[in-house]
Length: 205
Image (cartoon, rainbow, N blue to C red):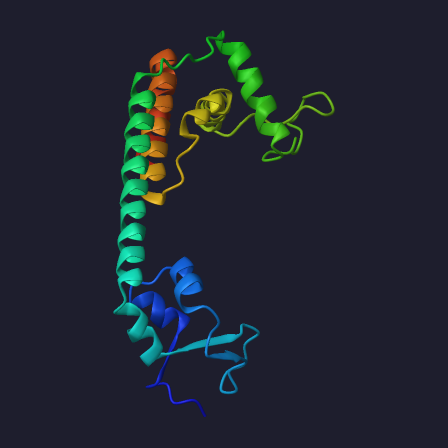
C-alpha cells in the first residue's frame, strides 16, 4: 500500500497553491497513477512524491509561474468586477417599455399565455355555458396571469445580463433587473402593483 505521508494527491497539490497548468508544466507525469484499490472509483489516482513537489516549489521557475498566475487571477477579477459594475449601471439606466394594452386585450392575452404554458386546462364547464367554455379563473388568478404575461413580454431585457457568469455578480444583476421589470409593470398597470410587489418580495433570496 502506498505510504501517503510520502505522496500527495492532485487535490493536495492544488491545496498548496498549484494550478492545473502549473502541475502539468512543472511536475509533469504523476509518480503514481492508476486505480485506488481501497475505493471503488472510475477516476484514476494521481499521486506525486512530496519531496519532488517541495523541490520544485523552491525553484525560481515555480516562484515566477506562481506570481504570473496570481497576476492573471487578479486581472481576471478586476475585469469581472468592471463588467459587473457596467451591467448594473446599464440595468439601472435602461428604459423599460411595457406594452400598453386595453384591459380586455391584456386579460385575453394573459389567459391565452397561461393556456399555452399548459398550466391550466379548460376544466369543467359551468352550468348554462356552451360546450367547451372554461370555468372562470379563480379569484386573483387573472391578476397573476397578467403579470406573468407582461413579465414574459419583457424577457428581451434579459439580454442585459449577457457576459455575467459569476454566481454573486449575476445574482445581484438578476435581482436588480427583476425588480425594475416588476416596478415598470406596476407603474404601467396600477391594478397589478400589489402582485408585482409580492413577487419582488417573494423572489428575493
